[in-house]
Image 1 (cartoon, rainbow over the protein chains, first blue to last red):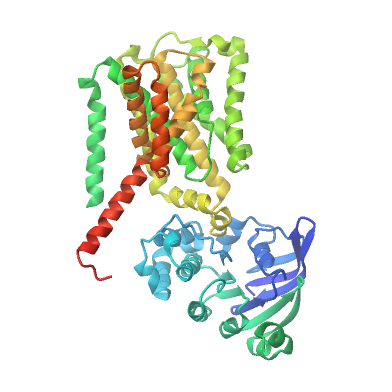
Image 2: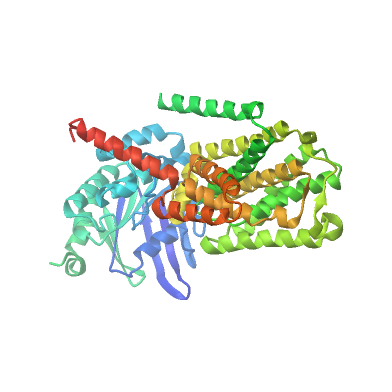
Amino acid sequence: MILDIQKLETGYGRLQVLRGIDLSVGKESVGLFGPNGAGKTTLINAIMGIVKPWGGSILFEGEPIGGKPTHEVARMGIALVPQERELFPGMSVADNLELGAAYVPRGKGIMAQQLETVLELFPILKERYKQFVGTMSGGQQRMVAIGRALMANPALLILDEPSLGLQPSIVAEVFDRLSILKKDIAILVTEQNVRESLKAIDRGYVIENGSVLLEDTAEGLAKNPHVVSAYLGI
Amino acid sequence: MKNKTSYAIAAGIAVIMIAFPAFLGAYPLNVARSVMTYMALAISWDMLLRSGQISFGIAGLFGLGSYASALAVLRGGMDPFLSIVFAAVFAGVMAYALGFVVLRLRSMYFSITTLALMEIFRIIIHNLHDFSGGPEGVVLPGVIFKGSASALYWLCLGGLFITIGASYYFEKSKMHLALTAIRNDETSARSNGVDIFKYLLIAFVVTSTLQGMMGAIQVQSYGFTMPDTAFDGNFTLLPLAMALLGGVHSTIGPMAGAVLLGVSAEWLKLQIPYGHLVVYGIIIIIVILFMPQGIVGMVRKASRTGRRSGRKAGASNE
C-alpha cells in the first residue's frame, strides 16, 4: 500500500471537517468525489501536512507522515498539483520544472531523465520552455503544474481538481495524459468532473460531510444510482 | 557567447574600478566610497527582498557592525582589519539568533519588527555609556591603513565585490529557485520540498553579515562613530530607494540605482547647496511614477520590444 489513511480527523480552528476518513491508494489511480465543502481539499491538505491531523493515522509507504512539515512530506515522494495552480508566475517554464526536482532527493539525481519524460508528455512545454508561466493560458499552466510535480519523481501524485476552469477539450487532454501516467505512479485525484475522470481512474471514493459514503471501482461507481443522480446528472 | 561578452565587460569594469585611485583625487575617491557603501547595502537589501521579505533593518545591522568593529579595537585591542571580519561574523550570528523570531513574521509585521530591532540596537548602544561611549560615540586610536585614500578606497571596493559575489551566487545557484518560489507562493514552495525557514534564515544571515561588514569598513575608514551616525536612518532609506530606482530582484538593478542616485546626490549638493534634497526627492518621484520596474526593468522591456518588432520585420513564420 502506498498511502494508507485510517480514521483521519481534522479541521480548521473549532470547525471539524473530516470525521474519520479511511482511504487507501495502492499502485493505482484513485478518484475522490464529493460536493463542495465535503472535505476533499482538506484531506489533501492533511496528507501534505498543510493542516495538522487531529486524530487517526496517515501512512506513506509504511511510514507515518501525519503532522510532518510539508517540505518533508514532499521530499519523501508525494507531489501535489494544487487546486489553484499555484505556479510561480514570475518564473519561466524551465525554472518551474527545475524547481520541482531541485529540492527533492529522489528527483534530483535523475533530473535530465525526468525532464525528457515530462517534455515528451507535454510537448507544448518544450515550445514554451523559456516563457514566463504568468503569460501562458490556463490549460498550459495546468500542464506546467503537473509537469513540475512529475519532476520530483513522486511515488504518489495528488491532483486537486485538475480540470477546474479549463475548457472541455483541454480537460480531455489532461485526463488522457493522466491515464498514461497511472501505469507508473499512484495517483489520487479529486474532481467535480466525475464523467471525465471515471475514464482515467481505477477506483473511487465518494466523500460527503467529512466521511466516506461510497467506495467502489470505476465501473461500479458509474452504475451506482447515487453517483448517477448526484454527480453524473442523468 | 553572450555570457562571455558580459563577463568580459564586467571584468573590464572591475579593473577600471580597481585602478581608480591612480587617476582620481581624494575627493572623488571619497564620493566613490560613499556610493559603493550604499550600493553594497542596496544589493544586500535586494537579496533578502528576492524572498519577498522587506527589511527596514539595514541601518540596524550596519550600526551593529560599526560598533562591533570599533569596540573590538578599542576594548579588545583587536587588529582593525581583523575587527571587520569579526564585526561581519558578529552581525551574522546576531541575525541567526534573531532570525528564529523575526522570520516567523511576514509582510508588514516582518518589516516593522526589523525597524524596531534597529531602534533597539541604537538605544542599547546609546545607554551602555561605559562600554559603548554612549551618545558621544567612540573615537578610534587611528584610521585603518593610516588613512591612505587609495587603501580606504580598495577596502570599500573589496566589501562591495564580496557583496556582488554573494548576490551573483544567490542569482545563479539553487538559492534563486528557492527564494523566488518563496516570494511567489509559500505553500506551493513547501509542497515542492523547499524548506522555507532554512532558506529565509540563510538569506537573512548572509545579508546581515554583508551589512555588518560594510558598517565595520565605514567605521574603520572614519576612525569614529556615534549612535546617530552608525544607525542613521539614511542607511535604510537610501539603499531602499536605490534598489527600487534601479530595479529589484537582480544584482545589476541596485547597482545602477546606486550610481545614479549616489552621483546625482553629490552633484546636486555642489550645484544647489540649499535645496538639493528637494530636487533629489523629485527625481525619485519621477522615476517611480514613470519607471515602476526601475531602470533595469525599463531597459529590459525596451530591448524585448525591440527584438519582437525586429522579428516581425523579418517576416517571421509564427
